[in-house]
Amino acid sequence: MNIAYSSCPNDTFVFHAWAHGLLPEAPKLNVTYADIDKTNQWAMNKEGPEIMKISFGALPWVLDDYNLIPCGGALGRGCGPLVLLKDQSENPASLSGKKVAVPSERSTAYLLFRLWAAQNVPDGLGEIVVLPFNEIMPAVRDGKIDAGLVIHEARFTYQHYNLCLMADLGEWWEKDTGLPIPLGAIIARRSLNVDDVTKWIRKSVQYAWSNPAESDAYVMEHAQEMSAEVAKQHIDLYVNKFTEDLGEEGYAAVRALLGRAAKEGLVPSISGGSL
Image (cartoon, rainbow, N blue to C red; front, side, top):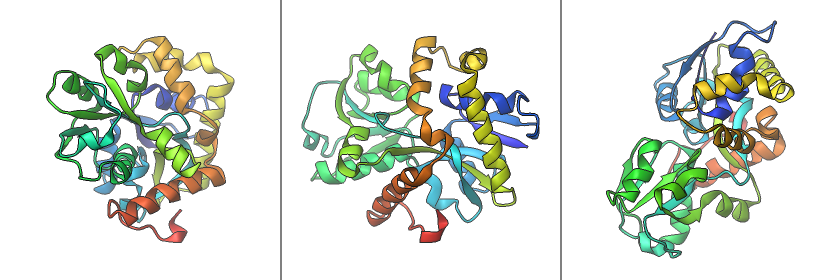
């Protein structure tokens, strides 16, 4: 069976057991490591492996061909994307007409940013530029763009670039809705048995929690020069109860995000029975 997920510590931690044949009843897993922007495109083009980690922001475009798997993904609190500037400013209106870099236009981070901007930047944003997430902070630091929307471990490292925080979009979302932030989703082609895929992923999550040290070498092998401390922070932040089971609260968060985004014309509407 083929799967694509990122090299980020939360993904390698979650899938370590299945990828290394530690779940006796599960089929052999062939792994492709790919940034979420790439898997989003594969899913929308009906390409790529049968199972993929994509952004919840891309989900409305792919539900005709894929099922949402209720585990293995990333939702949480205190883990939202950040809006960063080179110089301190607490006034969102200062972004009016400015050039902003984002990691994807098919991501939860982008949807949160646009929903936040609709409330807080009355005169509208300027140019939106898509950059790989690891290039955004250097571009803000070097003055190539006015502001950057960052994700992943940038939460822990943006100070190293002497950047200033304008807004924590996770904090804004949680205050506005009371719900966790839906970030990364696991999807599987509709030809696969959802119950089987769910069982294998959930067992992989549970194995990771029961044997946390076993995945250390695998996590750090793919951690892109990240320190072990930052990798652990990353895992602790993004792997939580929603990774094991979306549950009612998780599904409510997904519906809230995609429902609001549809009203703003950012994504297609999802019928009630699709989630």
